[in-house]
Length: 113
Image (tube, rainbow, N blue to C red; front, side, top):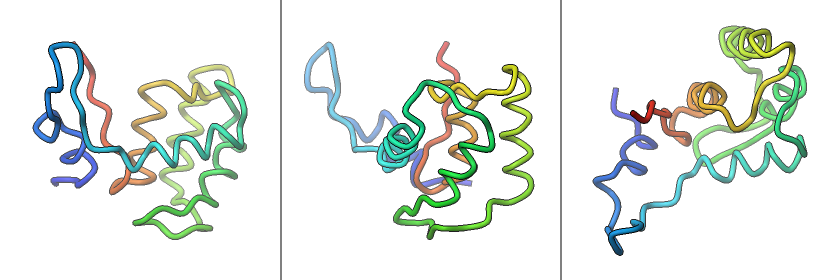
């Protein structure tokens, strides 16, 4: 599967402006992430709190409010159980969950080696 979000934010879609930085296409996921951060107002939250916020977010490709799939709910609950009941909003695993919740908006976060 080729996802638009993965292609747009890929290195092939960036212009090397200097040896220190590149100019890349803006990620549609940034607006989603900012909305989550504005509502949560902290670096972590419970799965229930995140589900309440995310289920009401609309994007260009996803209409909110919506009922999230049981699979997505279970994934987020499992993530919170790994961290004593809270989800770290800046973690790679949460970004991976956001990709599953908004596959056309949020790129899959690859592990940087």
